[in-house]
Image: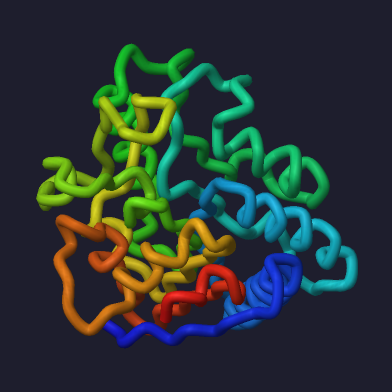
Length: 242
């Protein structure tokens, strides 16, 4: 477990530009070592900005996107062409604009692919297990107004699952109600965790997540830490309660 480092940016746009630049730098360094990076993306409005900025900066970067494995920390269990899907948002903002290898883009199964969130979680767990990757290099995560991370919700039983890679979630208080999420154990098998948070509506949750004391049940984001680094990239509005 690492102590979190908080970096406050003047605006959401500056946050997105910085995170995109840092991601390209980290990927370049890993590939220079002969490694195939394993990264996990998130969803939401700030993630969209970051993804678009990655696409904008990629032409001047030495990153070989065809040698990067791309995963997601969670997903909405809806049809694959539903605009609520994190993967579809990432495709529109980034993946359709950079030279990825489709075989290395690992979407969480949709409701077109599986009969239930639990079944999709099993399929995604199998994909991760069969990939041979035993950790992520970078996981980017948003933060819910209620303190949830990925789709691990406050006081939900999935917070205490320790024997699975991914879990199905139903009755989410944030629509859509059906989701699939990586577990704490899986998220914490990560070299670097990057929380990306913008907006005044997230300020209270940020303060609770970074407070010296507090429970994971109340604020699930407190349960995720990178093995090497944990960064919180936030804008001034999200930092207003610190």
